[in-house]
Amino acid sequence: MRRLDGRDGGGQPLRTALALSVVTGEPFEMTNVRGNRSTPGLKAQHVACVSVAATVSNADVEGGEVGSSTLRFSPRGVRTDPVEAAVGTAGSATLVCETLLPAAVALDDPLSLTVTGGTDVRWSPPADYLRYAKRPLCSAFGVEFGVSVPRRGFYPAGGGRLSLRIEPAEPTPLALSRRAEPDELRVYSVASDSLAEATVAERQVEGVRDALADAGVELPVRSSVSSVESDSPGSVVVVVARGGEDERGGDCPASLVAGFDAYGERGTPAETVGSRAAASFLDWLRGDAPVDRHMADQLLVWVALAGGRVRIPAVTDHVRTNLDVIRAFGYDVTLRAGEDSDRGAGSGAVAGLGAGTGTGAVVESDGGR
Image (cartoon, rainbow, N blue to C red):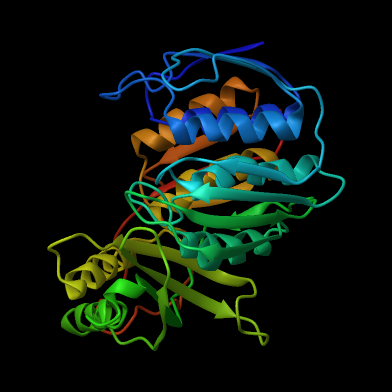
């Protein structure tokens, strides 16, 4: 039984523990779950993560209810029957999916998951980040999954529906220590039907374009604008930087995939929402990491499972607490902060912004325990 302290890091240590428990078959006990939060203990979306992981691994669970601060999770073998989970209201559906993705290495057959709740809500990756940033990057190291969003769910009502199909995987070591320069940006802008007359989705794209122009960044921008049905009005914009495309184009693997997002808020102009996503991209572009901050957190478990080397933008508290859980399961993962960039010679700067100046940090592993 692995003994873990979940006081720091919010829900990420719990999701990582669940994922590694499913993969390894090892039970764990986590105390002080989300102990440093203003409302400690499990919330509805964390309960959904526990429920999904338990269903897939036939686990015995103690303390898996809302408000619980101690969780005991004992898996008894992976199965691949279709799984459904209801997060309730606008709890994050994408974070439930993130919890289950590492199970790919333990599967013999594809696994289907359908989650209802918030597909696009603050403090979690939007559905289009999972679909257009995470999926092609994972595909590059041998992890394949499909994502569909039959219905969007915004705060506060939720009511969205997200479907995930995970293929069995034998991932190859990650090789993300060098950053190619982006060849283009893809902007995915979504708004509720009730906001169509105000052209919110279109104006979010314009906000991205204007922010890039103001910064003097010259990159091709391809945009996709969607108007969707939803129980609550809302909007989201996702900016995906891609580079090193192969001849197939589309959403196939690329040597560079990084995502940046912003959510609409009542009283905030749609152009400002777009400019916030663009600002996150511009901040990342000044550094030297090939992945964005959110992807850095999400890739740590894959470095442990598959091995490899990833340069991350910064060593955040989330990174440290996530690594603590991974190491507690016996994985040998090394973090070296402040290492000089491995950016290749001849890697030109994007016009208007100059060369990256950050040094970042490197996470690496041989993929074993």
